[in-house]
Image (cartoon, rainbow, N blue to C red; front, side, top):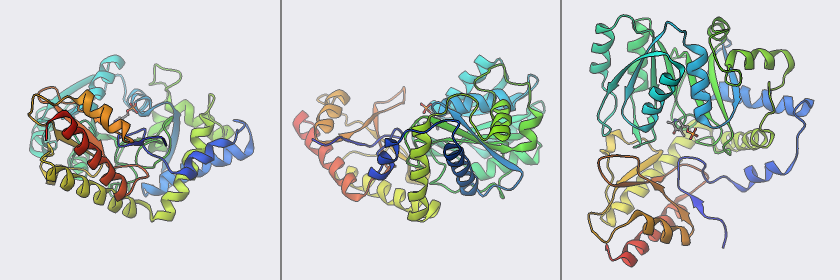
Amino acid sequence: MSHPYLLTPGPLTTSARTKAAMLDDWGSWDKAFNQLTASICHDLLKISNASSRHVCVPLQGSGTFAVEAALGTLTFPESVVLVPVNGAYSQRIVTILQRLKRRYVVVQGPEKSPISFDVISQILDENPLITHLAIVHCETGTGVLNPLQSITELARGRGVEVIVDAMSSFGALPIDLSQLDLLALISASGKCLEGVPGMGFVITREESLLAARGNSSSLALDLTDQWTYLQKTGQWRFTPPTHVVAALAEALNQYWAEGGQPARHSRYSEMCTRLVRKMSDLGIHSYLAPEYQAPIIVTFLAPPSPAYSFQRLYKIVRQRGYILYPGKLTEIETFRIGCIGAIDGAVIDGAVSAVQHALQEMGVL
Ligand SMILES: *Cc1c(COP(=O)(O)O)cnc(C)c1O
């Protein structure tokens, strides 16, 4: 049997062309590889409509490495970071700040809804010492889309710097740096850009990056050092994930050929709508109200039947060629299905029919 489709928020299903781009070996100091690095950074800046003030700093590792590097480099020991928490990934930002021994203020919101503009506004009014706001754009824990634009404008109006974890939205949802004055925009190779996992990147203002020199207490996660070295040599500071970079370059070629961000957004939206509709035909409903749902990953409520088990659902669906994702909510039982990756309507249909088969086999339907 061929390898299963990944209906997960990364790693995700990649195209044959992207996989094939990993068949060559690259010298990390070779000019051809340096050009590849320069070209992906150029593309990533273009996707975010960055200006000449912005730079893109690539970093080895999964997305969390880039989040930790951005927080550790771009905040100062005296900074106070406001973190609105409405899911697992915003909670992870809090954990990182604790490890970094940075001061922070947490606003806990319900997981079912986006971060509230009014609540953030009130907290900013009450806490004039807050210097930074760290927000997750699409909370992959549930699939909620947070109001990036209005919250960023609110924070910038008070002189607060904004750091965005756009891991699961970058490339698919519009993020325009000419409209949004962000200190850091963070994402990674293996999500909506449809590359393979292994590198993150941080898009920031060069001026802010240089002013942050000396902040990072980590050697490997120091973005200012990483950037300075890249500037000077055209090379990554330590061994780059060469195959990941090559795959991302090829994935970006396909991204532009597809029509860039608007096209990717519209394909993912179609996948998401189709998935939610077909699952609801089976009697399986999504956790979020449709107006809060980002077209990235959908959280479904587990059927209330005692015959249901995620383990069995996973196993049966896996045998039919699709990989699902467990839920990340503490209170209620859910599971998640991603609608991103190199997939089309036939993949969604196949996955839903595998779910139907599994529910029948378990005696839930
Ligand atoms: C995937 C993801 C991350 C990074 O997670 P890793 O496990 O390190 O890849 C961070 N934030 C969000 C919102 C994500 O979706």
